[in-house]
Length: 340
Image 1 (cartoon, rainbow, N blue to C red):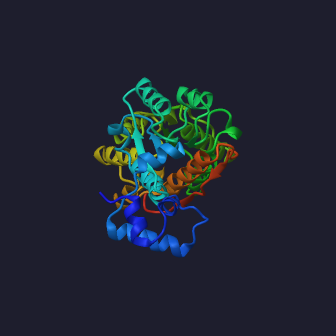
Image 2: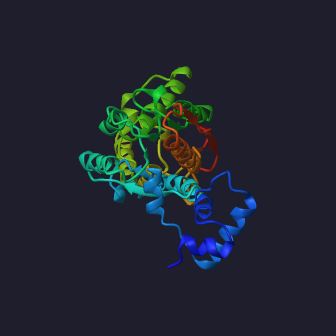
Image 3: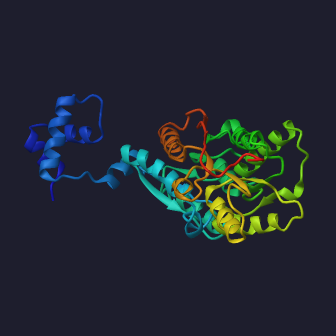
């Protein structure tokens, strides 16, 4: 096995200099670093990461917490894409990523406890934000570094979070339907305890209110962020005496369930029903008709959350940040004007 001493001998520097190059010490000149790294590569030397991390009191790993079981969460293309964004930064910064999930809230909580008390990771990213979340409370109590993708339910100014302006996004996409002449507009959201749903629904309500369109409680439904959830919701809407002409769906995967159910029941999109959605996952572009949707820049949500967490783990006095990723509407083929 190649050792630090072998690298030192090959380059004519001391073993302590090799160690400093491995640690990327700024006091070592670029030329020396280049020479030592070249020798390490040629000799096949790999630093003992565990030993180095023990000295530095760092694991060089971050935990990523899914909102539910991996089986369920990873059905939704949002999560693989946000993980790709996180991974782009962890790879660059030479951190590893530990993914955690569970079938119940208790299972997820136990996993986070194990990560924190076992010092398996330097910090965690929560890929959700829900009301009265015991995991968030636990991380605050233990003063453990964490970042939320979404808006915290409490202590907003004290928790670093990466989010979109979901209120404005909900208002913008609903206003677009209103401008196309729609007044009977339904809303299909995720669970009511998820802030992303709460904010997008509030934006939908504000757009309807400003347009002078009376609220219809029967047009507002909540379900899981899964294709099957969209199917159940649209069946309920179509059972109403006065059916909507447009639907705002807060997630592209749910929209696929809505779309396929409408087609099965003989409704053509957009001729008979207009449909708008959120997230702009790749499926929204290749489905027929292609979905008009809000691009929330999922990759950037992941990348910025990883950057913010690593900064926080390196400096626990780093002030809390609110990072807002801009959104834009991607106009495709799932909306028609009333009367056309």
